[in-house]
Image (tube, rainbow, N blue to C red; front, side, top):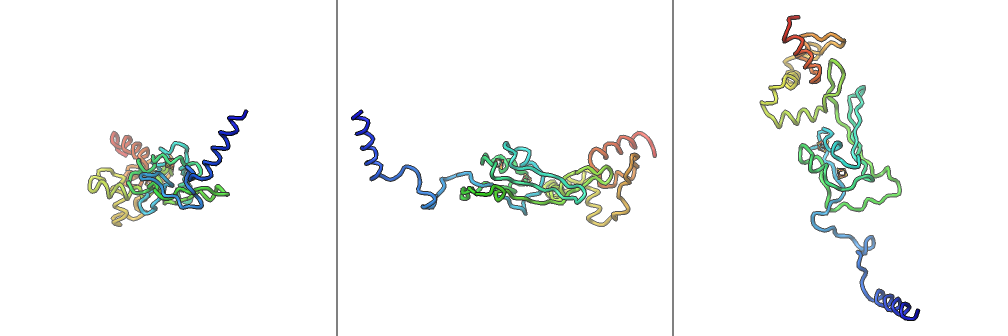
Length: 206
Ligand code: SF4
Ligand code: SF4
């Protein structure tokens, strides 16, 4: 019994006169090490709302919901669930939409809702069936990225026609209903509707 007591007293004295092994945070400012993976920071100007990061986030810290009535996609990022794996940064299609900070590490809060951030993006919706195609910013990004090759897709061509005002909204808006018409090929429609129009009118005349 005597020896263990002596050893404990010795350790207590040593610990009194030596510096702690851990850092002095929060009393002393913490300096993260090189390549530290801290809070993912979104650059909304370079985020096109494509949802790729939501699909690769392991703990589902990033989720999105589409409101077709309002034509808005809401992206929700919950940093209380984030495990700082860096997958969102790694797979971001623009390469600049989200980056893990090497300085923001203090995410302790009393109210977890304060660790949640939201973004909103305008949706591109199929004029025939009402399905979500993607966000308008995502489509613009693809146009910039692909250049003239983007217009080998008739959907992109139709969007360009609208942009250049070569066709007005009313001229080429698809008619909703079961039956699709040949002219719907020149509306802004989803790949599924485009396939239906193409198959139907490639093999027979209207
Ligand atoms: S760092 Fe990982 S866990 Fe955190 S938001 Fe990005 S993908 Fe999700
Ligand atoms: S992958 Fe990049 S561009 Fe797409 S939603 Fe995530 S941060 Fe935005």
